[in-house]
Length: 81
Image (cartoon, rainbow, N blue to C red; front, side, top):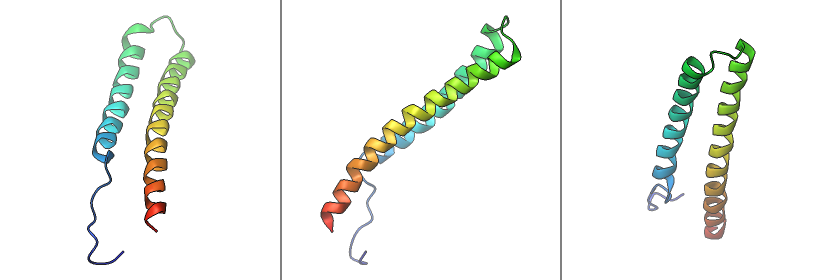
């Protein structure tokens, strides 16, 4: 990279970062509230399973979101070379 080139943030980056934060905190808050108040009849292992399912769902959503952005951004960088 030359000193003359500007270092701008790629388009769509700020929105994805904000959504990542919202999805992570929202998912964890949902899982904790759900397990604390709505799963009284479940065993401890079932409660842990509920939290793991929520975490895996968040990882899946975030992976799809960031992979699509990375593929688009990677293609643009490859075309610049």
